[in-house]
Figure 1 (tube, rainbow, N blue to C red):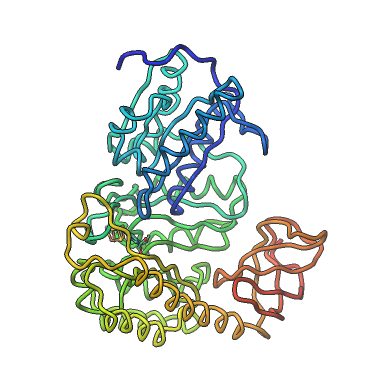
Figure 2 (figure 1 turned 120 degrees about the horizontal axis):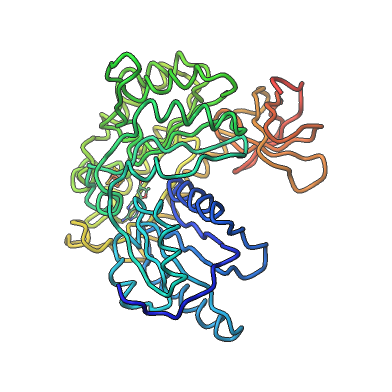
Length: 451
Ligand code: 5AD
Ligand code: SF4
């Protein structure tokens, strides 16, 4: 590609702005580590960075428009200050609209897709020489081998075990932006888990767009699924907690359900998106499960682990969704009583089958439905938290609270709990839950355990 910008100085500071899902948060952290290997430091709070990485999300809303307006704002502010940052666009908008970004936004030096960001350092060299570059290749496995090891991390860390999606839900861009489902090899993951624990992690969240589709071969050459991987990770000394997200109902197997009853380190929490409580809508979404098969799955999880906290994703206003079909979603919520949930207005994604379907639902109708759904989900989240009051549990301390002596962490059920104690980040503290709000609980310390 031809030089399009004058040579720039090597940036001294960076800022990675990540939008969207936990996978993007993970990718953003890894990009930051890559830049650090080049001696580039995070920009201090409140200061402009020399290099800005927009790590974008394409799943909802007008993601691409937002990218262009962010770039426009930086260019304008840069012109006023006499210094425009070097700009990289990463993430799923980069993957979906890379060429267009290169054409429409000359201020962008680098466009890099989610499977290619290990090449960021080379692209940076080119950018410094004044050459713009774009890399949206998808050789998924290559990226992980090329990423630097994480040296010092907090008590909770993400470990990407699987990427991509073959499900093609009709509303979703992920199969196009993240590519086909691939699993990282077992030995890479067990090796990385040990290193993460050595670097300070006590809890690992196994990440994947369809995490329970993970498959691998263990040391004995046996084909295993996510449950087998979880059991192997549970043997890592110093690792206290294991979580995983996000699962698809179609990939659930008996072993994973059983693991919830048998592996003490596997936390009692399941995020299992359902999207809708109407079988007609589920079919139009190409979800490959029905309301009944979904509820049966949840029953089996509850049988294996009666205290399991359930979480889900919902979309309101999918094309053609009638009032009665939306009310079926409300009934499903009433039946399941989720501990936590994520709910969204349907957003037409260019190139997906649903975007071309008849019966697009007006915005006001979607907004009304979302409000009604969130009101019920909020009611259930509060009820779940209130039902925990009076019980004791361990909280993994993640950070300081607002006031001196206050600490914040997560219960096994992923509730945010704050308490006062002489503790430190990374402690597992036994607390009695004494008060519940909609989004957090207060704990009272019983003892310092397993520090
Ligand atoms: N519109 C609204 N919500 C969406 N999701 C995915 N695609 C769309 C879309 N086009 C939601 C689904 C998914 C979550 C990650 O985002 O609920 O589970
Ligand atoms: Fe998107 Fe469906 Fe794949 Fe989830 S399972 S990433 S919603 S296509």
